[in-house]
Structure formats: structure tokens, C-alpha cells
Amino acid sequence: MGNVGNIFSAKSIGDFLKSQRRGVGAETVYNYLNMLMTALFAHKAPRYDVKGKRHLETLEKYYLTDHGIQSAMLGYDDRRLPGLLENIVYVELLRRGYRVSIGKINNLEIDFVAGKESERLYIQVTTTTADDATLERELKPLMSIGDNYPKCVLSLDTLLGGNVGGIEIKSIINFLLENP
Image (cartoon, rainbow, N blue to C red; front, side, top):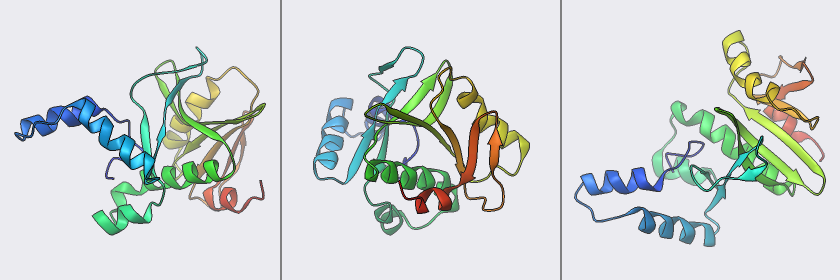
């Protein structure tokens, strides 16, 4: 639950547990994750290579069906806010009927590649776009994509917005209030 919004490696978790003298390997970690997904507690977002147009086998992310469980179990912590925002957007995209993956283009990450039927949408999620360095970091992977599907950066900023090179910048609140 503390890893929401971060790349997941069952091997790393298995290695850590072994260092704690617990005999748990990567396969056991994946078995537990599969049980959590079967119980609709969590969802897996596979990695998608935008350039190669295929799903990758490793380094996926997992999101909680109800992010309130994370706060109930771990308490609230500001350092988890970026992952929490990603989790909220991920669940909303599922609610809207999208198949959702995390994107990879070269060595850059795209928070979400969402698709349904002939639609595709690329989304970056950040707490703020108020400083130039953060905005540039969020725009860079989207600008690397060569197709013409919609691209969007979502943040908590309610007064900032607009369009940069065809990439829409808007508030997560407005995104959640949209009538899809």
C-alpha cells in the first residue's frame, strides 16, 4: 500500500523479505498480489512501450480500488500525495471504461496510457505545474509521442491551465468533474 504510484518489482520485495530471514520469493509475492486483485482490492497497470506498441512483462504498477484503505492502514502522509493523486486518476479512468497502462517511451515514463475502442489518451499526473522545472519534466514524455491522440497534464493547481504544444494542462478537480 505504501508503494502506490511507484514501479513494482516482486524480486526486490522477495529479496528484502529474504534479508529479513523470511523465506518468501518473487513467485509468492505475485501469488499474494493475484489474490488481492481477485478480491478487487488492487488493480495492475502493465507497462506499455509506446514506440514498440506492445505491453512489457515487468515493472508494472499497482493501484488500490479504494485509496481510503491506504490512509486507514498507514495514516495520512504528505509524501504519498503524488501516488494518491495517480491512484485517484487511475480509478477514474477505469470508471470511464478505459483500459489503463503505464507508458514507456525510450527512457521516459508516461503515467497513463488509456484506451478504449479507437480512442487513446495520454495523461501525466503531478501535484503542481507552478514551477517551470516540474512542468518541463511532465511535458517531456508527452512531447516525445509521435501520434495525434490527446495528451494531458493534470495537477492540483486550480488557477493554472492552458495548452502547451497541443498538450492540455488542467486541474485534476476539473478532470474529475467532467461528464465523459
